[in-house]
Length: 427
Image (cartoon, rainbow, N blue to C red; front, side, top):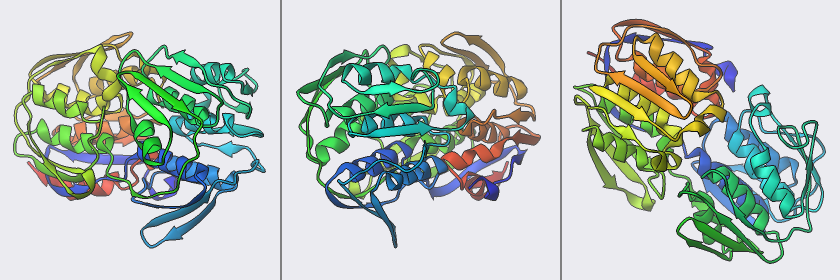
């Protein structure tokens, strides 16, 4: 997929963002829809899946595990419920969500599964899922003993546990819940703060025996039913256009069909505190349109308890902070250091290149905004969200900027450059 996307992107600013578009299907929901369809006994129809490489790897994974997948006019049809051992190592590419959720699925399957990915995946911590899955009875090994990919998982024969996660992470929680639907007894996951609830919502929709009480989720062994479902647009992708337009006077953007469910609209609250002119309009099917007009923003503080609900949107918010008057402080975001890149470091490097004053902390950033940006050459370090954040920042810098490694956007938003050209209007 990366062959169709330039390795570098040049952006000439300043420009305003003006127009209307729909972003790709939500990546987090797409992963889960595919996996739950493969586990359900029967035929599911999925529309609007993310067209990024990450979700493509998850689709290939369920095929390798024996699910039947057929293309339709508007999506895919998956016939699941009869999974078998894969004939080869399952490659998740660059997807942290993919490998962690697949590990939970594999733990519940009574056979051996090997999961691997690219160099970035091999550097990301896996003991946070290996520990609870072992407590449930799965055997998890590999060259690092399960601390990092590749992971070798021998599943089946699981029992429920009562587990408190050290961090609020939807990926960790989901891995445990996906194993829990195949385990005897009750599996309880307790989090220190609310994280995204896609897995809970989607398991309930498919008939799982699951309850949610605050930051505690309980699930029991469940047979899942197939569903026909449409995946709404990804708020993490919409955030780049919304934050970029909000911070530049004269911009006016509408993003349609955006998912804004539990723990996914936190970035809008941050932008509102910064003075953004936002309007959210309900649409058919439970999605929303977000309208934004550019204005002069002011700095805010992003507190630790907010971070689990907007961790993927912080690169976009960092660009808004660079254009806002004052110092924006982000704390409690140490999780950013173990994403596709060390995002605390790469956001700091990217914004510094644009002439922004940034102080880096172990768990966050201080971003001093309000000054004019300067053109920059940015290395996105193989991170799709850094590439997109840099492209948005470049629209506010007078002159030509270059983003190297821009082809990383193929993992989540292959059409990003086309959409940037569609919305860009000369200042």
